Length: 269
Image 1 (cartoon, rainbow, N blue to C red):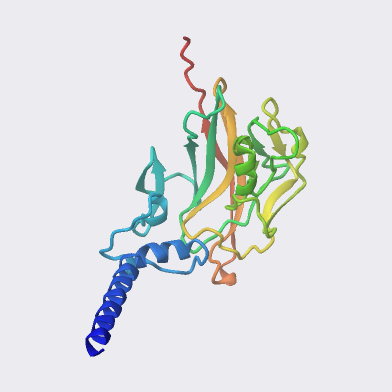
Image 2 (image 1 turned 60 degrees about the vertical axis):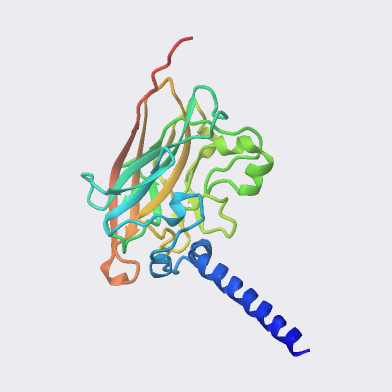
């Protein structure tokens, strides 16, 4: 009987050791996964010296201060923000969907990168003096597309073509399920792949101008599917808080931020 109890104890300790080992091994993965839902979590210390089992490098790669994280051809790299604008830098990145891209079009993720990590972006806008001009872009037919806030992943799952739809936003890309971003004074019905969207008295804006939706300095502002046969130019103006933790530091305004999308060389068969 005593031997039986001893054996049970040994097996019990073995299981505990195994569980504790697994818990230790996956601590970094767990922290990074939790960070998706709790952006105030810092995994730097927890992940120090550990091997992550996650496959998306954007989820576990971190850059030093004043460097920004970008993914280029499935490789994550840290780049220093450099441009002639005072508060933000424009950035665009091609999104690849394997062999499922629309023939004759390229999909771009368009973003602004803050030079000050304490700042935020709460509006992109156009007025009579400084129009906001969004290039002609592919729009999904019927009601599966979006104008602002991105596309709900469930819609993309059941209607894969919705990932090609063009839309504007401030950081949110999942369809804005709780209504954090809004638009005013913009006639989206005039925007398609043959007509630019020109805004002279309107804006995309956050309901809470003190929100810091990005946990990096990068704010996604658009998802554009553009014709390869044409040159495209996007011009935006932006408002943001200089320091979201101190209202007394006021706001910043940057106008006439230009994105250029050169046409692609079309190789005839």
